[in-house]
Image 1 (tube, rainbow, N blue to C red):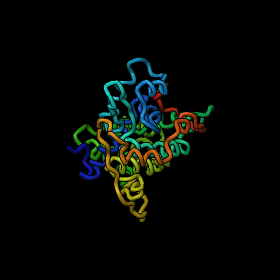
Image 2 (image 1 turned 135 degrees about the vertical axis):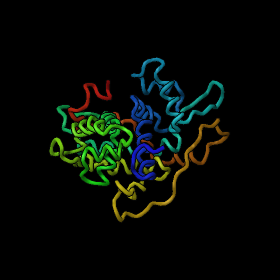
Image 3 (image 1 turned 120 degrees about the vertical axis):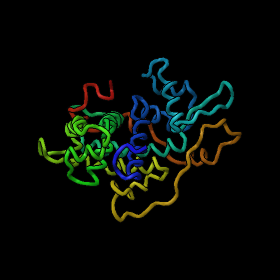
Image 4 (image 1 turned 90 degrees about the vertical axis):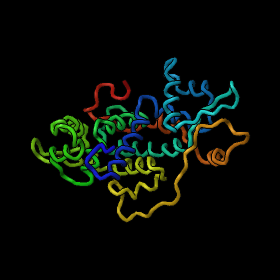
Length: 281
């Protein structure tokens, strides 16, 4: 069912990207995905890598990631179970450095350096604000738009004044600009800079390689060459008797290093508009 007054293809694109963000934004999800980089892990091995999680917190997080198709639970025997990325989960990981790149360029400078993992979590908080994706999509495609016109497009079944709280938040977050009350809204430089992130999330959510991001009709780069071949997600399956071709290929590729995002030091911090504690609550 349509959620905006935008064309069906655009509406579906926004819904897919919003859903993709909802999969990874909940607290600890990104850190768990990074901890699973490399060979599949037993539950106890994974728990040791995310030791800050209290007893009982890891299992429901893993279940939600398995239900989302990002993590695969494999039963080797009744007492030997491992967890690893699905193809779909592995394909999503390269979006994370894109988010770090955006954060380093567009978030305010910090008094203390922050690990890149915190840059990701803070950025996701901004991007998952209510109606944020739809508002940013409309402003990217139409340039300057009045608040009333945005309301008719983004929330056609709601009172138009309900548009202003999310708009004011996006202005406070630095993603949207306006000259003042009654003036039209437009993307800020930070909002414009989200093109690679949203393009990649759109490509991933529609089952294409991230190289298709450049072809996105709104966030892509005009004239960029298309990329071939799409990936196929893995389903949760019992352990195979021999390593699959997918696992063998994955083993030959460079894997994500947890330290790349857990300890990578940057010089940016979330904007003041973030609530105290933000995603590190």
